[in-house]
Length: 271
Image 1 (spheres, rainbow, N blue to C red):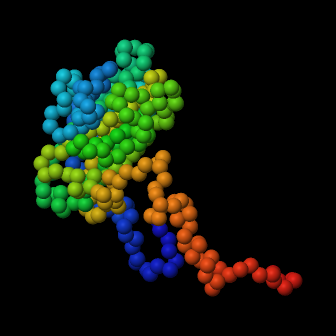
Image 2 (cartoon, rainbow, N blue to C red):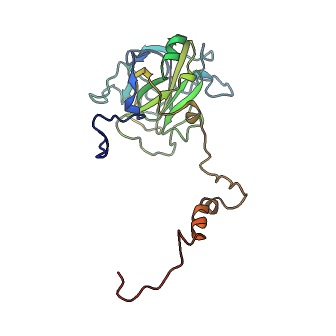
Image 3 (cartoon, rainbow, N blue to C red):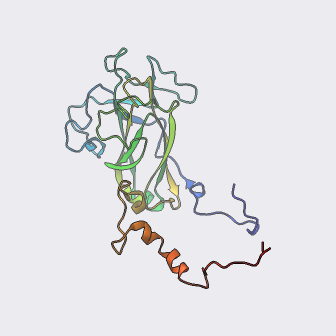
């Protein structure tokens, strides 16, 4: 709810993500997936691009993909992750099938089709996944979104090899697909889920829905694909210190007496 005492009666907020009208799902929790939960098997099959398996068409050969319907999960030797996290397909948890190190990651692929008219009429797609631990979502080989996956650089890798515990219950993460990322015909949605460490007791993946947005998404394709280097300061236009450059409006105000005059001694008793 948004309250504005100055707003006219009947006024309506626009431009927020909850202002988007959603259409008929192109995928939901009953979708069938190709998935990989085999120990020590790279879905890229040695390809220099570790995300080669996320591209449309057949994934790299020689990989023992299985096919099943979600949700996917495992808890110790069973599938009881609680009433909010049902499991239809059990995943392998331990590499040795018993009590050893856990499988590092799980990989999922599924296809859906859209015609050009539907793509042009939509504002893109809005999706929701439930996952434990990390998640990275791709469409047609392009990364769309991720959560807790900042340290993932290899397919066969734990999130935190030296033992930071997972987040507890599976997390729910929303993502958007810009219309410009969609293809007329077949589109491939791919997801990877990594375990927090080698002692994790559970894993989970569920796609709740992927639906067309009837209206503009809150971010453009260009904004979604923007990358910033968090460890490097940008250069100021004049080549000087970046933070000094940011303070230039203050300098201009300081040199304008009508805006920021010198300090003056006030008469005694002034409050």
